[in-house]
Amino acid sequence: MTTIDDEGGGRGPTLSGTPAETRGSERTMTIDRRRASGVLLLAAAAPLLAGCGGDAEAGGAPEAQAEESYSRVINVEVRPVEATSFTERIRLTGTVHANQDVEVAAEESGRIEEILVEKGNPVRSGQPILRIDGALLRAEVEQARARARMAQDIWERRRALWENEGVGTEQAYVEARYAAEEAAANLERLEERLARTTIRAPFGGILDERRVEVGSMVSPGTPVARVVDLDPVKIVGGVPERYAPDVETGTAARVSFDVLGGEVFEGELTYVGATVNPDNRTFGVEFTLPNPDGLVKPQMVANIALVRRVLPEVVVVPQESLVRTEDGFRAFVVEAAGEEMVVRARNVESGPSQANEVVIHEGLEAGERLVVVGQQMVADGDRVRIVGSGEGSP
Image (tube, helix red, strand yellow):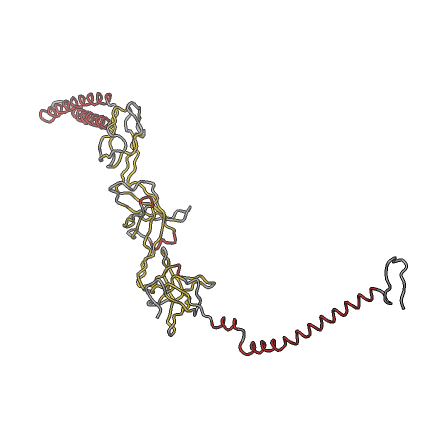
């Protein structure tokens, strides 16, 4: 049956049924065709998939086989383990002190009359360095000398009369004797005071400072100069109290100075303190160092190394050759396994260390080959190749 759409104005005749139903039928037919094509593709690929599955069950994937057959070889450097003597040292920081360092003070009052030695120059023990005006004292000395001569003359006359002729009294005899002795003592006192107007170096050294000028007025106790003795010098340091049983007078010591290029000076401790400083829990030590050229100066910082103990015939290895673990330290040694070289892990018990070396009490034996480069990259049983140590793989 056909129908005519009058409102379309130009539409032709159509089949019975709505346009929507027609379009739905067309979509259904298209989906059915795609499903059919998919079924055909799966059917064609099934034999191929079955063949691949059989190969996987028989021998595994080629990539897996290659991974299972791969074994790495790591390049390492080794060092022979040797038994040697090890010296454990106590390292301290100290300072330099002059052997003697004295403030020279005036012993008489007066005006500085003359400077005899300029600062920075060497002086001998007893050498005059300054002079105080002593004109008044010189006059007093002359007066005392005259009185002493007169007292001595009176004493000699009284003694001759009393002892030889019995003339005079015993009291006059005794008074004359004591007057002569008193006058002599007074003269000696004034002469000593006059001598002290010349200020002298108390010991040989360097006049390091001069604190007065010509014309300065001084009194007894006024500092006028500083004299230091720099040959030898003393190196002073503090040792932690836990080392008290190991340090005594005569303990071998080495001292170096960064400012002098690290040159090492050797000697022995000349002083060990008897008490511990409660502020820093250390006891003092001193090391005397010859200083003929004056290169070492007071207050320089010194690096001190004291010998604590010497361990003979022990295994000593570089610290970086050890690998830290949860239980301590581990080292690796190289051993021959047939025609190959493999590493073996060893748990070690370490002892005292010094600089870059450490003593091994247990875990390593003399003659073994210790891995010193590459130890962070290997594990127990790894194959290795020895390089860089003069040893080749077998």
